[in-house]
Image (tube, rainbow, N blue to C red):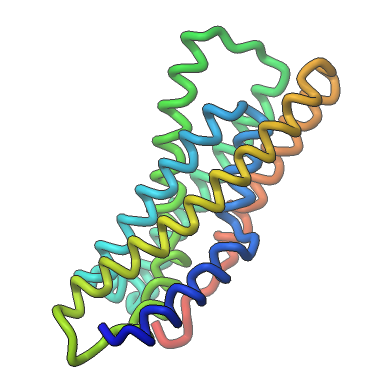
Length: 210
């Protein structure tokens, strides 16, 4: 890959990672409602879900999904319904005390949720297919390997930002943990927000060039 192209990619990827998006809001909401460990688990899950899109994009699977209105609609609907379900569950669980054992189970669930939420978001697939090819070097090594490398870097940058968000959200939560009524409302608000992300995904349109 031409060195100039790489540095241009890195600058653009850093800028995009720093712009608040659904992923950042999702891990923040999970952290505020369930704590730092759940936030980190969610972040790890969304990172793995992002890598799923990177691999799918490099193999042409994402292009097939985006090219088919039916496939795009099915994946989008499943992802949207899952987010809405998570939001409702979070809202209903507000105020419940967690034991250490249930927290461990919750962290595993948060990781799984993060993977599914990200992997079932066709908007992420569309982003990678629109963004990464601009920086591929046709005269360089395998375009597939280049796509995977740049995609992995992009996911890593997004994950680093998510980690910072989790730390900030957990610090905010720690300040409010002694106020149960406020914590309950905060958790309910997080649930509503997560469900709102699902509604937003359900209303997303397939890219015109898909």
